[in-house]
Amino acid sequence: MHQILERITELDKGQTIIVMCHHGMRSQQVAEYLVCCGFLSVFNLSGGIDAWSCECYKTVSQY
Image (cartoon, rainbow, N blue to C red; front, side, top):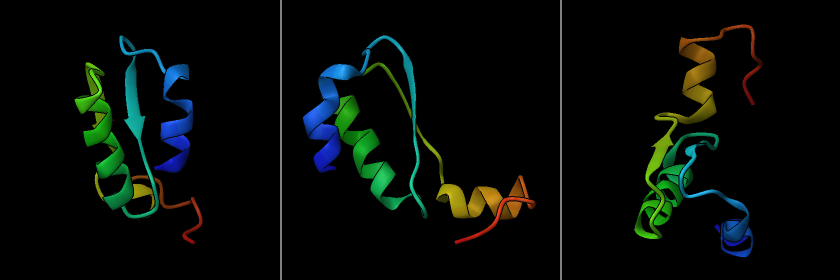
């Protein structure tokens, strides 16, 4: 979250933003924060990269 606070001015409030982390919990917090800051189109990768690699793209190594 610290990096988001430092670099939020680099993001365009009119662009679609997809936020992701390992399991989706930290990215959900960031997505909610961005919406509170006036970003219009923010999505969280539910379940994170871990779920995505298990369900959608099995050739991606899990970590």
